[in-house]
Image (tube, rainbow, N blue to C red; front, top):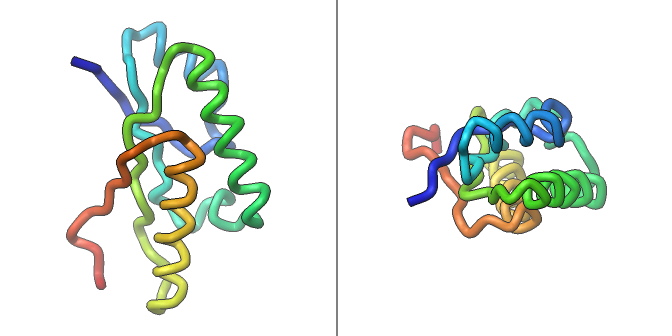
Length: 109
């Protein structure tokens, strides 16, 4: 059995925080990409993927793994913007090396 805890976006985390998660005895991280108002969603695609791959490298260097990624919430107004955020977070999930993308059924679409 693996024990996990939540993280947050790459601008707010990094090696010291992941080291603390490891020190506390966790094996996996639930990576948060829920906030579509964050700087992560404002990044151009290349910077977005690069940022997440760097976070993945920091996480894996400590023997941790991203178990799952929480998808966008709240979503931007409009179907097109909401769908773009969803797709971006799915690409981010792949960059982080996770097989699981979480979306909550209470979403307003």
